[in-house]
Length: 619
Image: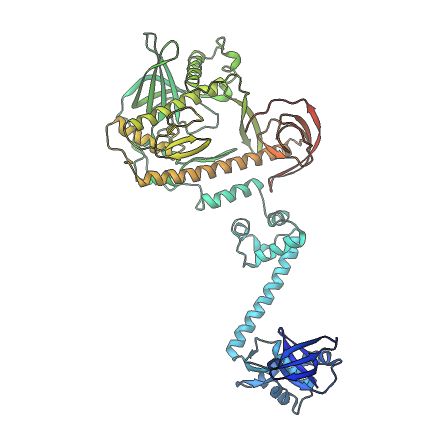
């Protein structure tokens, strides 16, 4: 005797060896013996096992499922009873098995109700299920067609309105994503590369920018209409002529300087900071904009300002205007010691906006000894000498320190120019030191009056932000409250409000233990770091684009550590897998094998050592 039974979701046949209560010992055609439950047996038969399942499966393929559904009625039924109705006579074991196999293969039509028992699906349920199956089939065909188009480098027209989703926020249940995933898997490439090969990326630069904008500026970078700010003209006019020093691309001019001889052996140096806090009131619409954006976003060739132009223009320290300012005055003796400090809220006359590119040839290390002929040379020399004295007072003066380079990126019509500028040059140092002085002194002013502010501190090598006045060990100051870029950073605007409240003997905008102050600090820290990471990423993009633009196929580099090198004349560090073990500072020559601006990858090959070891700059 043989059995037809169900196991692991399928049907099998075997010969009975022994039969026990609740179980049977059986032997398959292969000779394999096993124990099965009696409850899993659907039918016993005498027919030979050889060819039985082949015949049953072949017969099942001939059975029309919709016709079986129409034959079975609405009540629960057994497979063998349906087989008898279908064939009109007692079915053979093969025919009965065929009906069981066919019923089992169509769960949409027939619901299982126990061993060998089924029930026909209701007509409305069946129609809905069949419609869903047909829809799924058509979708699968569409997905396959999309995938083939993508593999052939063709972008399906249906994808054009879905590119934002596919690039930045994929809906993994969409047909477009499934097709993209299939094409990527079959071509062994990334999703972005597949889309790029199909022409979905008109501009690689805009693709990288779009990822950032989608996360941080989902509603766009524009501003809602802003009412014109009333002029702040009820301030005393300072008896100084101030000038600024900025890069040629700077439009938000936050800081300016003045040098005024006092006639008693002292010179008064003014550090003048734009004062938007006088016009942008707490809880105003503009304040909400500043606290939402938190900082200007910088990138080569572009920027996204923290404030709209209507709020920048009345306060930016543009030449030819008298502008509101928060000023710190330093009375400087002949030995460049500071004998008196005083802060004021006033109007300042701006007479010149000096620009780095035009000023640097007249004011650099080589022109310090003799007047270069620039009308501001004497004032700049005095400020540089003061800056060195301030640097020494902080304990950070080190003339033996190797020079480090900063890089400015200028992008015009898609072409990039990358210009190196020595960090710590006279022009750079005098501005940096005077801004450190202002940030430190205004932080001290808040501390002395027990007014909270937002400080940048460093302890044990860790840099962090805090609302308490704490030392910044890296700068060598007792406290450091960002206050000198209020047009570009929200924390500077907040600190400026606090400083002005002290100078005017008014209650602070943000009292001690202010939740708003702490919240603004946390939000700024997170957002500012993200903005800086984006700026670095875009600078790396333009470095790679520069290599393509100039068709550079070989480049010098300096080993930084292990297999990392710094490329010559570019702020770009890359890994060179073929680099042998070399000492840091070793000059090497590299072959540029591939530049991929889309995936931000550079493939280089070590060609040889160029020169002996040189001293390494630290990043």
